Length: 502
Image (cartoon, rainbow, N blue to C red; front, side, top):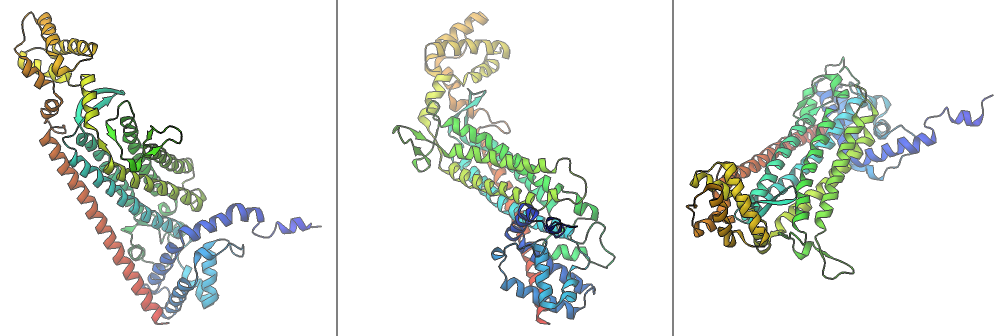
């Protein structure tokens, strides 16, 4: 005899399955994918009518019902009741209620939830990628303008956590700019993979109906349809490409953020953050805490972690349509974009506001003898020494100056003469005034005019190139937006024309 419990388990959906799977999926779909599903319904309908698969009179009635549903139903206000499996079937049920089950069911001709899902996920990703790229370009602009402003502002550059050589803040920012340019290019390339419609693949193998996949792709604002229909529902490289690019971008941004934290420490203090970004200790009134750097660091790391999680979810999954890449996984990925945008906004503001403190830079330059490499280079050029011998003389000079807590320009000439004479058996040709000029930070930077160096002309040329990169990014974004706006306008017009004939 069948028990009541057994009878309950024959009816779909089981309450636990409802609460743990179907309701969360429904809530995610209504929040993130409702508008995309509406666009897909409209584009697919236009194609069905244009190819003659659905007669125009029927298409008109369906279009009018879709327009009414869009006006009258707020997806956010809907709650999952279990009457239907998911958000897609709820919308289909609503359409059938308005035009009848036979006519309402014709919209689903030659398509599947498989190709619908991947297409609406791609639409959602494109929207988020475009927002991220816009904020990335804003950060790029902030970096370029600050590099221009501080192209001659001296800093101490560090290697292995120790003072290494003088450079300029503009030159340092140029390094960040070049990485960001490559990261934006990676994200644009990932967007190109996303920008291929899956519609028309149906479940796996397309359809026996004479569908026009290119037409649907165009109406949805895609560059083209993804060719292989199995790939449309199985190849989630559009997901891995995006989150791989996102992970790299914020992994890379986290490194200069860490530098900024170090540079703003009391001991180094070559980077000053204005009071508007500084929090004061609740107990120690003397403490200026530049906490935006900490927030930037952990939020960048959160972005890396969330993006990496998306790649991990895709790992070792079968090469077929699967739930692993759908609904809730897509929603999880969107959280990475949300955090990423916060980082980009805050970092752009901090880059514009932060300033190099020239007094602390001067102190650190004096204490660290970081210009000593140019003394060795000059001895090679002017005194005819090998670099190794010149390096050894320079090392002796640096040790002597540091031991006396002196300044290389003011206090280094006497130990230099002694070290040079002992090493070579003759007096140097350099006099004290020339020596002081050679080991100045300004000279160190000025003579480094090689391609990519911090010298004035080299850096100005680099910044001009960065501006060209930024302009090219902006132009491509405008082109993409213009094409998608034209596609949306055409789709709206076609649906309005159809609905008007109902």
